[in-house]
Length: 187
Image 1 (cartoon, helix red, strand yellow):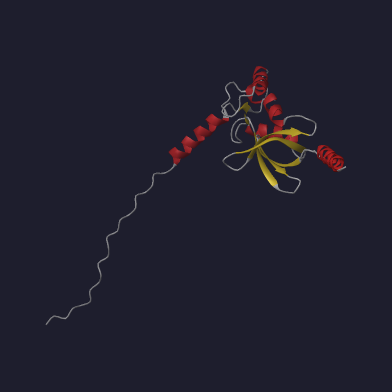
Image 2: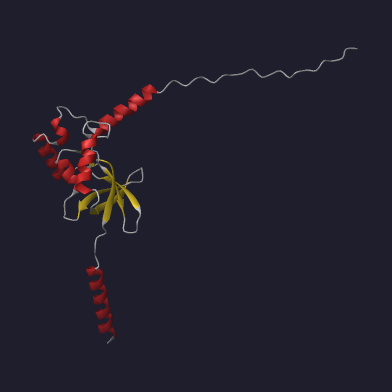
């Protein structure tokens, strides 16, 4: 009897957890740039998410604003689920995002020509194929004759900032003040 009741309880527990296996959905509340969004979790916490395996042009770069607008049109205000859960050195969650209807946001951005496959972090053949298709069809940033990848653009900006820094002025070295002696009385 004890074995039967244990099996019944175990099967009920398994069925309950299987039925409640709903994926957590997040609401997209802010688009920071083409590949960085802010989500609102079910417990009302803001989460900054960097889209994995892709790199969009910087906002100050050609097609940077277009990439941000495309990402906004695609997912702003919508419910999404996260695929993966890693963190980068800035504390952002690095993951792929999928809309409720099953569209992968990361893939869609590359497919429409608003991002590169970030080869330093991705060896995904499907993503490479989507980028190649966008290049061949001159979609998005591939309309430009020779687009600059964002990782090269960032390196260029960094070297310009270093060159623009004014040389530090050397510190002034002051002579120590001599103590003032009061008039001495001579005998």
